Length: 66
Image (tube, rainbow, N blue to C red; front, side):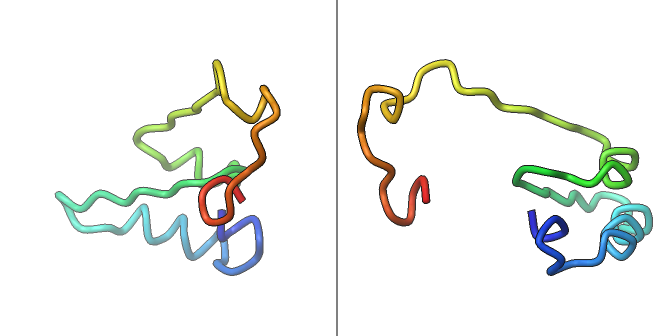
């Protein structure tokens, strides 16, 4: 997530979510969401891998997994 990398200030992102116009949805993706963002989020989904071909030795593909 851009906030984790310091590309976006967490406080600015939280303020954006809090002040968005009615009917506007903001989608943030990635890992390591800051707790302050999780507090103001309307929906939080965590995805976990059940099976992945990487586990069978298939290398990560440029532009897809890495």
